Length: 165
Ligand SMILES: [Zn+2]
Ligand SMILES: [Zn+2]
View 1 (spheres, rainbow, N blue to C red):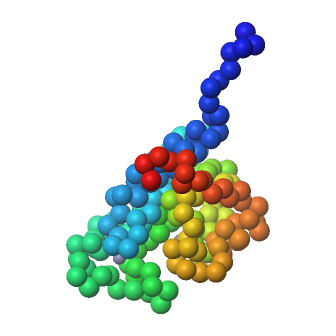
View 2: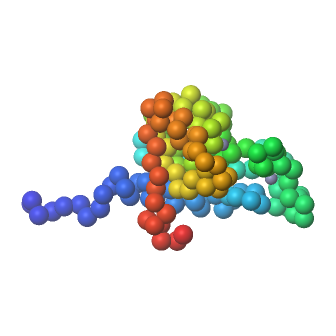
């Protein structure tokens, strides 16, 4: 019986499953510039998802601002969009899902505001794919630094582990 071993590392597989799901969900975003997806996992199960965009039922940036692009914030973000992780967290709250101790999978690392939100909701682990600082050409990962300072585990999932990228 000693020879029988599980052929996979189950922790790693979970991360791959959920980050791949976050990537699929990001494709639902109507954002012109960047599609971001988030998946909230509690005890091994998906309890909420989100993608970046204006509040549900409002603008679709890719249709409504097809030629001009949507109005920009001072940091060159979409004026109307909520970030993917914010949408995922708000959905969970509206549905009375306790987020203490859960893991959030995001295709882009959190901005500083989302990092603060992640921390105060009690999320314990953040797994992300791409770096917000690279996308925004910032010299610091402010969100990740904030999370690590406050004891949230942060893990950068390698894009090389996802064959479809
Ligand atoms: Zn927009
Ligand atoms: Zn954010």
